[in-house]
Length: 622
Image (cartoon, rainbow, N blue to C red; front, side, top):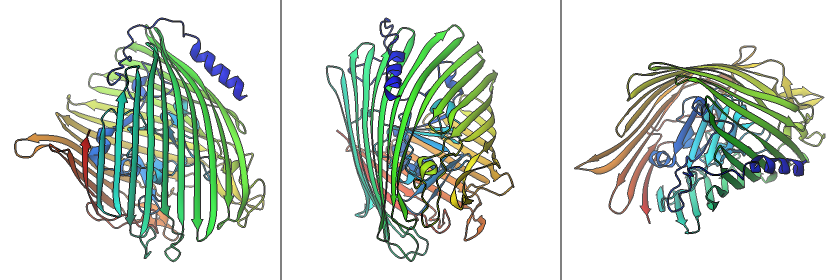
């Protein structure tokens, strides 16, 4: 099967290798290439604008003073985060009210969700930010673009070349500090090389509420990127990314021993071909996870591997039509050895998935475009399942109106399918090899009004439902396991965003009203009914202070339901972040205050969040 798919992918991309290149604008071998960092998969020229894509680039990341990914994502509207303590601890993300395993996480457009986790979710607490070049956020079902598991949306980490050679140091004491460096070199033969590395140490109060000891987290990252022009119309891209995070793990406030050790590395290589009428990309991807847990002297090990082959073609517009198509093949394997509280026997399993996708955009006129995206996935256990997305965008003067219907799916994870190889553990956990995929349908209306070139207001209304949700069942085949629930999960919401941009100032005021419930009306946990906030970014240059920038973030996290100790509504929180950067003759000085009001709160209940922290930093170019 793998050999046949490989041959098919090669044929798809190589069909047009004989065509002539016209105006090869990407061939800038002696400077920064004049191409965008990342393109959304399964899109074409006319339909690109219908993709709701939030981009956070490297400059914005540095201005925010962020240390890890959580520092960035927790101030994005429509995203709710819970973290079992401080930095490095287990972190779940809920996008538009969907479950924590309904957000697909990607590296350069390829999925990297850890298949050895119980439900295939991604632990955002392990992701630090120093070597990430860009973060892209896709809210709403994105299965037609990326494949399974993007029911709530997708987060894409980009590791492109950074052409600014620099090093940075930040911290506030010997136990809380980070250092990172970036170096790039362009060689005369068309080879671009980039090396990034970082180290971060964090030590704060106990993650468990009421705990007595300090908990620490250490993170190390390496990222190597390369681009090589083979011909004027053909180049290769490759990246190696590795991270390792070790954090203290507290079973309870009275049992604070143990640690979690998470290691991941990724290898990607792609071949890019630009022709007169098309752009073609062939990508190979491999990622590996190795997680180890010490639970009061009991060690658990989780390993998983993913291999992906992907080919995609984008056709240049022909009159009023643009389109593209492609295929991908993904093979996942994982193993689990749990000697801790679950006393699970060693288990292993594998799945594969073959996906084929296509898209088309039709431009009725300069102010109306219809876009269609479709994808089919042939999974080892669940068979063929389609997803699609249809969007109609229409301009009425200063109004932009967009209607979207989209679907998504999540196939069961390796643990849900195979768990304990059919055997039960001390909790009588039973695997479910017959589990069906979760499926979603979402209707969305976006209305945007442009008051002038500086001020705009955007409102997004969405309603979605998830059927066949895989939920924990305490009475499955005489034990407990993950089974398909016939009651739908429902999400409704309104996202409003007022944006003011003038010169070097940008102010965003947002508000989200949402509801996430089961069919019986009970609330989903850790998802507030309301959030609102402010994001402000500004660059100044005056005669007294010279050039400097200010970045301010504020978010009100409304009341939500949680176990406290039974299901109840917990209080709201208000968190703020302030960062100031000052350019000097020797480099850039930074000052950052997180949790400005020193808000004391638990999210989820039983886990304390970090109080106010002050960090100083210095960055120098070389």
